[in-house]
Image 1 (cartoon, rainbow, N blue to C red):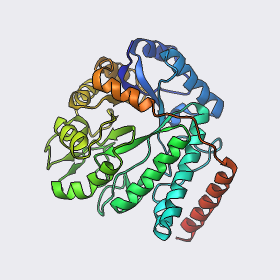
Image 2: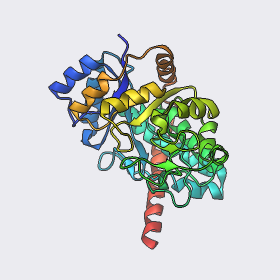
Image 3: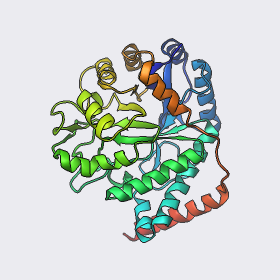
Image 4: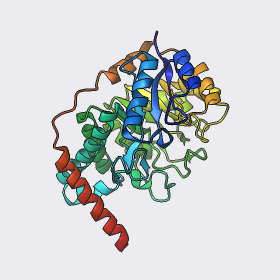
Length: 344
């Protein structure tokens, strides 16, 4: 039986009896983990294994947001701290090859952490291009301030993950960097004209359109659709994401429980799927909402199923890697970063 077109969260560090029943009945395509689901390495690995056993699919994807900096679900004492994306632009500006190599190496380490646990999808890289005056929700998560910087460093980061056997998720397509509100809390509205958007915000995603999975932005772009955010706008998905950007791989929504979206959770889910998202993402682990999402998510079929299968087929075995040397470089980088912050 084909899985349903949604990714679910869970409430805690173990799968409850109610959640086991829900997973069996609803058959979500994948699972996403958050800090509330994390205690230690053995516990996370066991949770991942149990989810796949319940799903009856050894290839069922398990996702996490492990960017580094502010967005890091796995952390000390069991996992190291990682730097935010903006750190790499300093090295890139001094030496492009060094900056790209460091971006790749650090995400390779992140991927190594995840692969050991059975987590095979990381919601990274952030390809949003920040602009002055925008909300800080992206801020130092961005790799640079120009299209070239973001593309080069995001490409390197995605390559590092894939070399570790972990799939990257390109976010937040077609761009969250210009938004003047945090879509977790409110609906951002971008009024820039089409020419500006195509030259800047959309350009980073166009250059990375071959990546296997992408996550939408809950952002209104009035030049295309004055009312609906990209996640629920057929116009934005057809004309911009599938059209101008040329993204032909699996498209998932950002979290449908975020406050940028309106309507019930079920209505949000249905709207995202109707607009052209292949899969809806629901993160908070609240059972009443999970049931609504499941009820409004169809079985994966047609092009959505083809894209899902194509994405998972791009997973590969980890390549040889000197983990000890990379961890030493990471420790030195984090020490240097902390010293810079202390001096500031």
